[in-house]
Length: 177
Image (cartoon, rainbow, N blue to C red):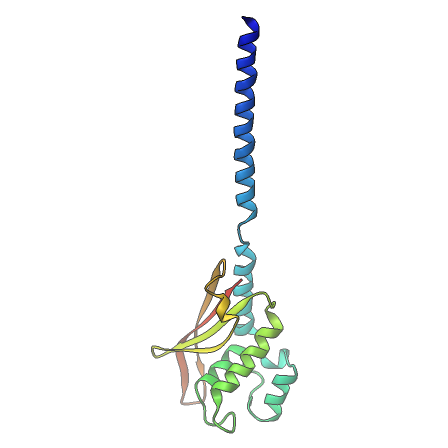
């Protein structure tokens, strides 16, 4: 009779251990499959901070140098956010042929390719007076299947000239993986 009670005890312990082991495997596997959003959130904030604070003369590559030499960028003390907004605002004094949206797109694509890793998609938009304009984007088709998307928005306004002010507008950088 004593043996029969020990069999039930061992069987009960094995069933309990199996349930515990299966539970731990499920918990740890679900934890490993989560996307790392903290790093991407920091990346989205860093990119927006870079656009707000970096002046053009601090980060010049071949495309920016061509824009400066062609007279499309008149003031290299502007920040990148300001210069993209100036191009977006269709200031007739820039981009000789009046194709300012292409200037904004070219500058944004060049800049984002330099600072954003290729595995991330992005969408850079400016909303001014209720009109939302996509300036540039990358991997837009992968947005629907992405694990997460993070947006960083900044209220944008600054002095264009002595009598003109740009904004207020909302500049949004949307990043996904």
